[in-house]
Length: 189
Image 1 (tube, helix red, strand yellow):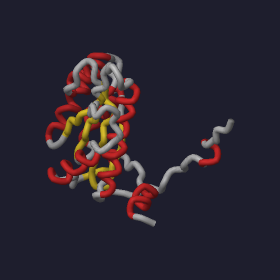
Image 2: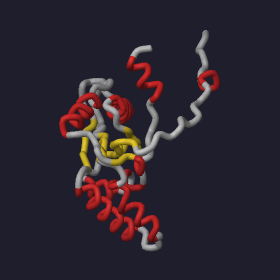
Image 3: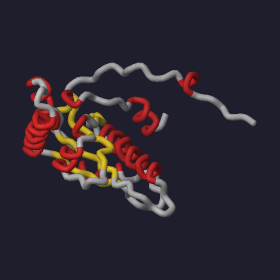
């Protein structure tokens, strides 16, 4: 079995709260982002970009998002506010993959959005290949306009995923996977 097949067969998400330091070095992160960007991209538009949330910025972004959550929902529980405040500090670092899909004369926006999803998957696989764990999440901040603005998105941009990266503190058993026979059909004339 090739190394690639072994990697894909073993890849699984690691919960963000089980991804501690050390995270990828700057050189490793650059490699991960470079590999993440090697995806199908009809028209060579690169309809995505990265926002790296690292160091003290993780806690500050979490704190500001918790404040915004309290503004948008005054009845929010203290537990949820605490979880939001800690959200980006759970893992060693977070990479926001931002979809910049836009109307184009030849390339449907849907294809551009799928390309951003492929970036998220490549990022996860590249992190795993370097020995790190990853979890692809979204959450309310990915959809709330003021939260997206706070994170640094333009109004037309969307969060394809927050990729939490770090060194796994535990290895969880694999989850049940779909039976291929139940999700596969063959077209015939």
